[in-house]
Length: 119
Image 1 (tube, one colour):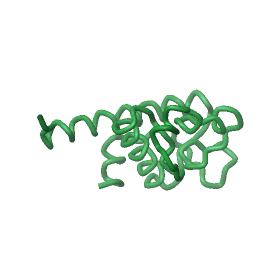
Image 2 (tube, rainbow, N blue to C red):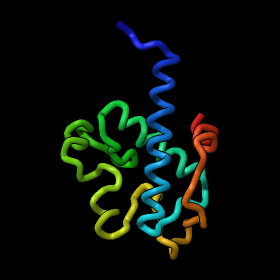
Image 3 (spheres, one colour):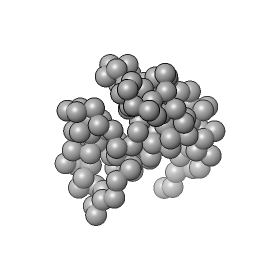
Image 4 (cartoon, rainbow, N blue to C red):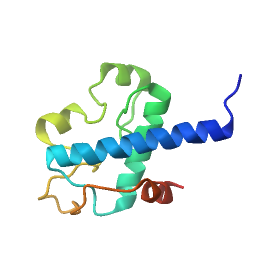
């Protein structure tokens, strides 16, 4: 039984909105901000949502992995990754400290903005 394109798109949109909501909440909780270029934030969120859909975990989309499923299972690079949780170092530029030159003043992005930047 195959999944219809509409059902698949609904699932992708749901995962994208879940990742967006998570990122907004985590940014507020960690006192970090999204990138001044909303396209960066959108692309990272889309990558996290895609990995959540295919791997069952929000594996960092900005790294190369020999075996993505093994890395997702190990959880080190699952967002927020260990370097982010321990040192506030986000390789993806999704969560930036206020003193970072690329940090915006925003901790939010709409689903429509994410979709517009990733379509």
